[in-house]
Length: 153
Image 1: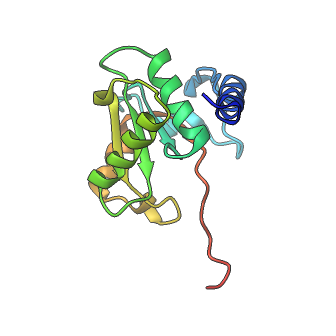
Image 2: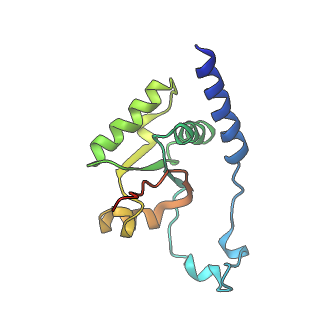
């Protein structure tokens, strides 16, 4: 392994260690910033699966976060849902698996759900069915993608 690759890996591990420690949030014990009762946003009939949504999974930091999330949370009932800029879900998944392989990061691929998305669009560019699925299953959102904005129109 080259020194540059070692330094890059060490930097990513440092960033992941620093920013990947998330405290559990109890919606019933919290109040939103606008003063509304957060409990009303989380009705008791809502079934929350312990899934996490990750943007930026194909980037340097995102791929290490994906690896850490899956490594630190073993179990079949915990998935990480990755939103990836791509033409379709198949090519989005291939991108994620390719970058994991290139970084030599081993994970249980069955626990990764990859959706082609665009975070700049309504409903994240997802079908209403997929968007509704996210709303009902995601417990944590980790947004580390870079949004590409054209400066020239």
